[in-house]
Image (cartoon, rainbow, N blue to C red; front, side, top):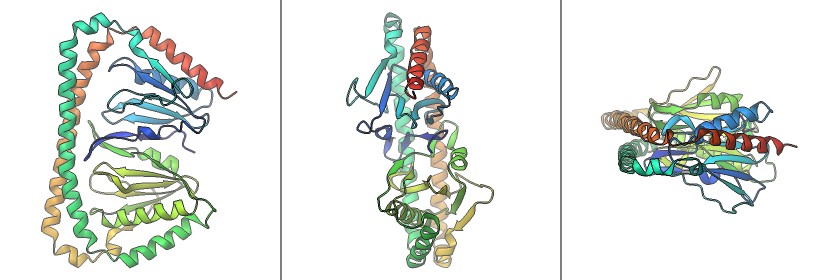
Amino acid sequence: MYNDLDFYLAANTAKGFYSLFDELYDPFGGWRAYILKGGPGTGKSSMMKAIAAACAKEGLVPERIWCSSDPQSLDALIFHDVKICVADGTPPHTVEPKFPGAVETLVNLGGFWDAEKLFQRRKSIIGLTAECASLHKRCARFLLAAESLDRDVKRIAAACVDLEKLARYASRLAGRKFGAPRGRVGTESRRFLGAVTPKGTDFFEDTVTRLCTDVMIAEDEYGAVSSLLLSDLRRYALGNGLDVISCPCVLDPDGPPEHLFVPETGFGIVTCKSFHRFDFPGAQKVRYARFTDTAGLRERKCRVNFSLRTEKELLEEAVVSMRNALELHDKLEELYVDAMDFTKVEEAGRRIAAEIVASCG
């Protein structure tokens, strides 16, 4: 159900760096985890890509978790069929073993580097690391400012929403999409469908089409209607015993879902705004105006438009910060690359892949 999907599990947000890595695996549910430790450029992402390719040949296709700071790099693989994950456990999304050996296996790539070479480069490594961290903090400040404007727009729009009409619609929609209660409460997984990355505000549209045969698009530039609608649908789905994937917004990671998926029914609903447009063939669209006093909203048009325009500019600056941070991170990786014995890294990757495949037997 969750195989062959792409998500982020950590991102720069209005609340700073925000990690959902505690949702990688359930240590009490029979899961095993390989936690990779090592510096930048030590081959963690390349190892995971090789593991994914080797396992795919045996019919094991994982959920892929990508790095929002460098969308070409993997942060984790989750093999749901065999309850095994492989994850980059280094900062800023640090993963530490809860039950070492019994559940988690530590894979120390630091054992394959030339420590003396890295010691000789320590000033450059420390300096680049500090500069990179500073740029990520700068990105978070832009996102915090954007969130303030986004919240103001949402508050203005919410005052113009016909709450009773929206609640009736959500109830009818849930009845059609989720069916009768199943006598249990569903479980919720959280993922970032999109993030602010060095290449822009990036979204995994292919994940939507792989997960859903029934896609709805909530067209809502102001965010009030979509937030209320998706919150209600999430509550109905969980109450009916359906498992859901909730995808928060990077401007409000603790808030209501911006996108919601119910894999068992094939249903999903995504929010469409100016900086992330979706257009899936055959998708039903629900527009904010259907539940909004648009005349009342027009009275606040100047303030709302200013906020939306400035919010977009702040997001663009956040992207620039991420891009500059990646350039520094690439230089940091170069300092590690020629200090590594990648033959041993590759051997460790093959061993892990073999152990994952053997777990099917």
